[in-house]
Image (cartoon, rainbow, N blue to C red; front, side, top):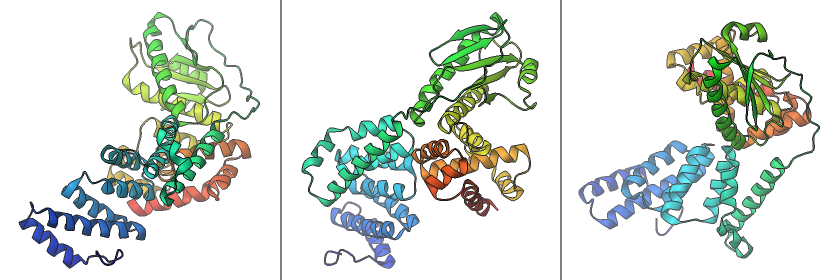
Amino acid sequence: MQQDPRALPMSLEVSRLEEIFGRSVNDPQVRNLLFAAHFRIADAALQSGVFATVDQSLSRMKFLDDQQPQIHELETYLRVRQNDWAGAVLAARRHEAVAGEKLPISVTLAGSLHNLGQVPDALSVLNRPIFESCTSASAANDVAACESAKNLRTMIAAAMTPRGEVERPRAALSVDPAKQQIQSDRFDIRFDGENQSGVARDVLFVLDRAYVRLADIYYERPTRKIPVVLHSQSDYYNATGAPFWSGGQYSSHSGAIQIPIRGLPSALPREMEDVLVHELSHAFVDEMSGGRAGRDLQEGLAQYMEGKRIESELSLAELKRLAHSGGGSVMNFYHLSLAVSQQLVQSRGQGMVNQLLRAIKETRSEDGGFQKVFGQTGAAMRTDILTTFWRRYS
């Protein structure tokens, strides 16, 4: 290993070294040699794309000495290769905890935060004083990191720059004049008298909090105050024509959220918080896509933003049945929409999803947006994702 930087220990050699270490756990030379052997194997496996081997070696290296910064540097790049942006953020922060801020890891951290949709956090990393050294950087890795940081800043700035588009007209929402009203800078809540006043205040609080979170995830936000109407159960279905199983509805036509309130609760039921986040996500996606995002993309992203994950929603047996179902029922539609959007966010990153939504608006078609950002139609990409899903669970 000392003579040839490309030399790899054989598995029998590593096994023998593990045996020696088991009898000499306090010998620093043995520990260091075993660590170096696992690192050499992990580094080569990362270059070859054998990620399972990298994970195995990383686990062993962490046991030997988890304060070595090269462990967390290697894991950062592994998670990026796996499109595991949350894992990359954790590994990069662990690296900084033991080694301080470095240019390559800092820009990787910023890029991973951007792909998670955490744009303010990404910009905060890009504004670190360490990037001031880019003017004098000479090492190849540092120069490359500085160029990546410059490109990432340009991409974020372009995505966040207002484009002077004409605001899309919305239909006026017909609301019973007997309903009372409370407002914030972002929402106009209508409700039925004192019996719903406590729920209305809770709805406003939940929506304002969710708005702040979604505004950090998506590049654009609704340009006007969002009307929200709280209905009695029967009033809701009569006013919206929604199916019996609907827990809420967002209308692209009027830009309004309408919610049924069951009975006369004094406070907002916990399950209604997820409904509000779901419907508010529709408003953000509707704004970004110019109202042209398809129903499956809309519903998949809304479920993802309220915190649903397909593996948590269904048992293994149910996932297998879904893989064989081919759609059909309403619930299958929602579950498959979640599976597709979840994979889209987790594999391509929230930043790419935001680019997709903006491209849908620019091209005035969902397929046009998919072609511009991913080079294939939405139907083709959905088929690719679901083929993987079916293969995994069938």
